[in-house]
Structures are given as structure tokens and as C-alpha cells.
Amino acid sequence: MSTTVAPAGPAQSVPPADQKQRKSSKRVALVILSRYGTLIGLGLMIIGFTIKAPTTFLTLPNFLNILNQSSLTAIIAAGLTMTLVVGEFDLSIGYVASFAGLLVVGFIARDGMPVLVGVPLVLLIGAVIGATNGILVTKVRINAVIATLGVGTVLVGLGFAYSAFPIAAGVPQEFIQIALSRLIFGVPNPIFIMLIVLAILWVVLNKTDLGQKMQAVGGNIEAARLSGIRVDRVKIFAFATAGVCAAITGTLLSSTLGSGTLAAADGYLLDAFAAVFLGSATLRDGEFHIVGTLVGVLIIAVGFNGLSIFGAPTWFQPIFKGAILILAVGLSTLARRYAKE
Image (cartoon, rainbow, N blue to C red; front, side, top):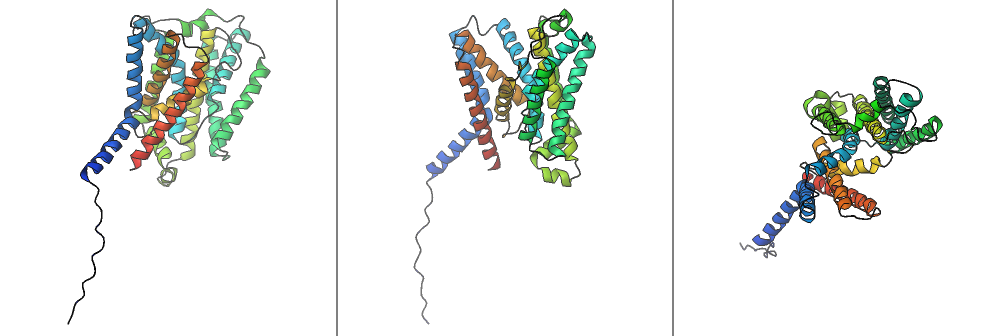
């Protein structure tokens, strides 16, 4: 009985050990870049600006100036973070901030409302606007981009109807001092307000049952719904929080300017998105979180501060801002990609 031996097939090529090592090293480098690239970039900016302007940049007054200038962006970006955590977008936050800033000055300066009444009322209005966004998205099933952009456009019209011109006469010093005074250790009030808002939202997201539900909804909405989470309520809460944070930003901006002005805070929308997406590529694998948002805000603020110190032309700032947004989304996408591998 004869046996036939099948011809041996071509030997499988085994990648050399050094090739595997190179691939592994490349992947590790990309993972580090996706998680810590923002922190590395912030550190490099601080070192570079310090070397170029040691007596101007790295000083306590300039440090407080950076924090003060970034405080309003941090507050509105923190609210935006809440909506992104649950997997939605809010394009109305800049319009809400402008509308709230106009309203609060109108209530106080034109209508004679006490500051202690006018400010909480405007924050409540911000919450109602945010909740309206949430209802349109969850109950009416309108796409979040369309719903929030539509609500923001409506607010522009309502702002014109309320006051087509800046409201500057009769603004009391009590209101102006909300943003301009330094009640504790000579630190500007907006910095403390920013820290309080960020601390509250961090606790909500990381230490409460509601925060766990928000992250579950953003992670897998169907699984969250099947587990008994009331998804619509969670999303409405996130939008309402974004509305309150936008109203706080608008109030502080009007206090700083000493007037209520149409479209004064519209530009905060792009800054907030850039900061939040930069933050999602900080320390975590593409997840939105409050600490990361603060880091993103500081990157933008430090960059703007350095450009200002070195006399960069004003037209370069929007270029820098747009480039930061592209970089932020790129790093966030990279982080998510390697988190799945």
C-alpha cells in the first residue's frame, strides 16, 4: 500500500521580531499621543512662552489673567460637556449666553429688578431654554443639531425684539462688581465661580447615580434603556444644565462689559467645542469629561495669551482657534480608535 505525501505548501512568512517591535512601539506612541498629547502640548507652550518672555508670561498676575479670561469659556464648555456625555450636541449655547446677558441687564437696569432677583431669574430662563432643547430632541425627535440651532436662531430674534441696541444706562455697580471684584485673596470672582461650577458638575458626573446614568446613555443608549434608565429625562437634564451654564457665562460677560449687547457671547460656541474635544483626548480614550474640558480651555487660553504677549496680529487668532478645533477632533478620534483595539 503506497502512501502519497502532499507537497508542502509555501511556508507562512513570519514577521521579523524587530518589525513586530516597531509596530508595537508605533502603537504605544500613538496611544500616548492620543491620551497625553494635549498635556504635552500645553507644557510645551508654557515652556516656550516662558523662555521667550520670562518676566512677562510666567508671573502670578499673568497666571490669574489667563484663568480669568478662560473662566467664562470653561463654564459654558462644562455645560456643553454634559450634553456630549449623553451623546447629543447643543449649538445654541452661544446664543443662550448672549440672550441671557441681554436679559439680565434689561431686567436690572431698565426694569429696575434687584440684582438678587434678576440674576437667578435669568439662570432659570437658561434652564428652561435648555430643557426646551432637550424636549425637542427627546420627545419631538428632532435632530439635536437642527433643534438647538433653530432654538438659537429664535433667541436671536427675541433678543432683537427685546432690545435692538446695547443696554448700558442705569447698570448698577452691584451688578458690575459680580465679575470685576476680587473678594477673596485678590483673585477675580469669575475664577471662583468657574471652580464652583466645574466642581459641582464633576461631582454630578463622577459621584452620583445620575452621572452614571448619563455616561451609560452616552455609551450605549439601547442598553441604558433596556436597563431601566429613563433616557429622555437624563438627556433633558443634560440640556438644562448646558442652558444654565450658558446663562451664567452670559451674565458674567455682561457684568464684565457693564452692558447688555446682542450677540456678545455668540463666539463662545466655537471655543467651547474646541475645548471639550481637546479635553476628550486628555487622559481618557476619547471620553468627554470635566477635567479634560478644563485642560482644553487652558490650552486655548494659554495660546491666546502667548499670541497677545508676542504681538501676533488679530487675524491669526481665528486661524489658531480653527486649527485647535481640527487638532482636538483629530486627537479625540485617534483616542477612540485605539480604545477599541
